[in-house]
Image 1 (tube, protein in one colour):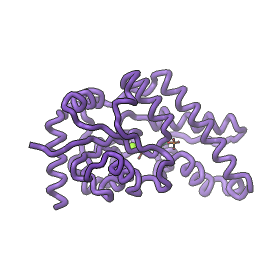
Image 2 (spheres, helix red, strand yellow):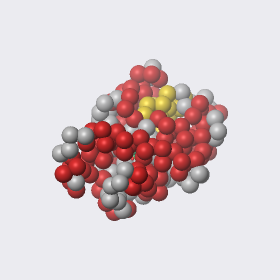
Image 3 (cartoon, helix red, strand yellow):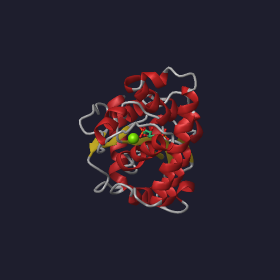
Image 4 (tube, protein in one colour):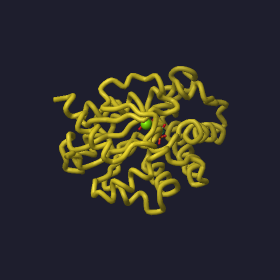
Length: 242
Ligand code: XBP
Ligand code: MG
C-alpha cells in the first residue's frame, strides 16, 4: 500500500492550460495599457516560457528584444507597473470562466480529499492568479481545499530552482518522499526532483518535446488516472531514486 500523504500541484499548464489564452493576452493587454507596442504572439510566447515568473519574463523579453527600454532608469518601476496590470487582466479573464481545468484534475482532487490526502500548490505564478483560477474553475471554496499554497514571490528563486517545493514541504511538515508533485514542464520537474519530490508529468500544450527524464510517469493528461494509479506511480518514483 502506498505511503503517499500529499499531492503537490503545479498550476499553469497542469491544473489548466492558462498560458496561451490566459497569461499571454493579459501580458499583451498590460503592454497596450502602458502605451507599449510589444505583442507576444503564440510562437514568441513559447520561447519566453523558458523563463518562469511574469516579471522575470518581461525582463527576459526586454533583454532580447527591447534593450533601449531595459537601459532606462525607470525600467524596474515599469516592470512592476506592467505586472500589476497584467495580473488584473489575468484575473478578469479567469473570472470570465475561459480557462477550464484539464481532464481528470477536478475528479482527482475530489478523490484525494475523500481519501484524506493532503493537498498543496507549488507554482511560480502570483497568489491572486491561483485563487482566481481555483474559485472560478474548481469550486467557489476551492482555494481552501489546499492546505499550503506556495506561489509567486514567497521564494526569491523561481522554478527550476527547488525553493518553492522546499517552502511547501516545510509547511506541510512532510518528507519529500511522502509527496507526489504533478507538473507539466521541464522547469517544474527539475524544481520538484531537486527538492526530492517524485514527480508525474502531464504534457502541456507548450511543453511537448521537453526533457522529462526522472519523471515517475509522463501522461497526456489525468483523464484516465485513478488515485490508486497516482499512489503507485509515486512509489515507483521513490524506488527509482533509492
Ligand atoms: C508558470 C509561469 C508563470 C506564469 C505567469 O510556471 O511561468 O510565470 O506564466 O505568472 P510554472 P505571473 O507552471 O512552472 O509554475 O505573471 O503571475 O508571475
Ligand atoms: Mg506549469
